[in-house]
Image 1 (cartoon, rainbow, N blue to C red):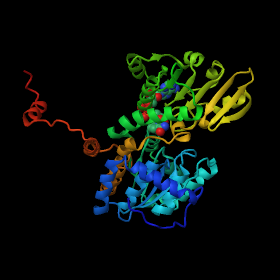
Image 2: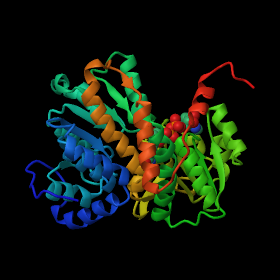
Image 3: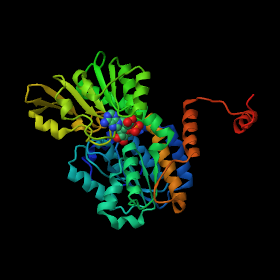
Image 4: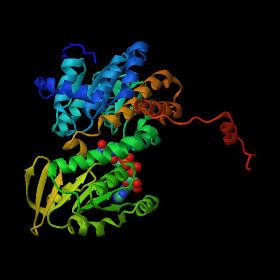
Length: 426
Ligand SMILES: NC(=O)c1ccc[n+]([C@@H]2O[C@H](COP(=O)([O-])OP(=O)(O)OC[C@H]3O[C@@H](n4cnc5c(N)ncnc54)[C@H](O)[C@@H]3O)[C@@H](O)[C@H]2O)c1
């Protein structure tokens, strides 16, 4: 991987001396991102993003670093800030600044004020494009930095919660430019949300607690793409998995997958480890804390830290202490203890490293190709949330299969004709 020894003057990272480690880890991730590597080679030749300023608000991880480098190599001028106060890898942020000439505004553990100050710094870049994971960048631009809006031609959004927020903005007539929902690509949510979140969430829970999953009762709230992945990984680790849902179809699917399905009020009494992945708020609330066993572990892997009602937990407690990194032990007034992981923020990024590069290879290939698509097509796109074109999605799947050495069949002309006709029933 080529690097440019540019020293950025505008950045805010923890410590540039961490850059050596960050560079090695960025290169390690790159080895498992063959699809992004292919796109990067094309971008270097074709320069599809030449002159485009991109402000990206993403989890600052080794995988994101490889995306940012790809965009830069495609001609873009990229600035990066964090999409969560706890998800930044400080060594990666340092290396991006020192070794790759990419401005980063992100420090792991930053407080809310710094988090938003960093988003504003990313908007100072006067982007032509925004790239979001959770829609914080767009919403800050809309509410606090309207001066930059006229210059923005398009945007991309990485996650389920961000897409939901953006669709609400579009419905209210607030969206000022077209945004593509990268999350809706099949090569994104079927793999990243399911296998990526599934594995890395287990990793996060285990790293910060060292709890034995085998034999435990592991409660997964939400059986969407992330929940399915998490439930299957928890089962694989030997847990008795309990699923809670509000959607009858998803609940039925969980039943037929062999999970125990019940209301959270019931699950609260018996669970050992809880993890919310719903994109909703107060999924674990006072009425549930009231019933939990002494020593229960509660965590979240949904986008925002609202899935667990932490203010209620605070009120119910007489004291709290940090027992291990990312573990807060709340002592309730009745003597029970409840352990909150990672401040209720996405536990896979707070205490582990987020998704493995091999799965982010597809999500970020989608991101890079969507950027190229938006630059080519923004003039004809309405100011709303757009889905990823099917051919782009299939291209990423094909490239991933090629990289894995997997060959598949091709429709014969006869089969194509058969599938396209309605009168050939026999
Ligand atoms: N941790 C990560 O790295 C990561 C990765 C991808 C997505 N996410 C986030 O995870 C969340 C879920 O994403 P998804 O793609 O699985 O969404 P999804 O829409 O596929 O699934 C969410 C599920 O939660 C259910 N739900 C909603 N309210 C509930 C409640 N009160 N109790 C029980 N179930 C409830 C819904 O019915 C739905 O089935 C989102 O916030 C998304 O942004 C996190």
